Length: 197
Image (cartoon, rainbow, N blue to C red):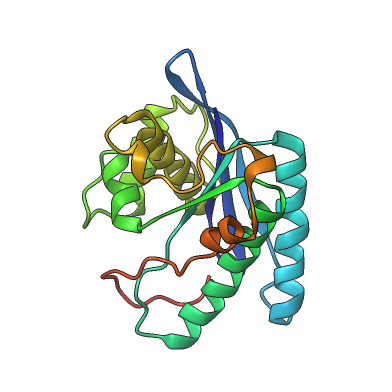
């Protein structure tokens, strides 16, 4: 099983590919797709779309996991982040992949970081679990790998498999209704204000 984890942002979109091989998770690829922060939003979204299409075509994941949105006090930031998430969800659905969303707190817990821990704690746990040799360029890449690990943990737990949406369904059996399911509203949970990424 190969999972593409995505940490969405309108300027920096983190991605991480994690593969389950012989019962062990290993990092296949990771990085950050960058958009010009001075460019109009439409151009930034197009740049993210092009970059993500390349990642999907190159690595051919079996599933996509996206970090859900937490509540922003800044409505404009939340709206812009929602646009970036929409690009990721749409491209994954168009590729016929199952799409899974996880709230930030669950992603943190899945890698052993506490709910109040910051990005440094997530980076340390991801580095340890995937035996990364070199530090990554940005926290967005660590977060994306954490999202992919979260999905692998979920998929490997038989008690949770019944709650997974769209996982492992043959592409030929997917209909318009299931496509709509993939674009369900994101999780809204407790969080803090943040500038648009």
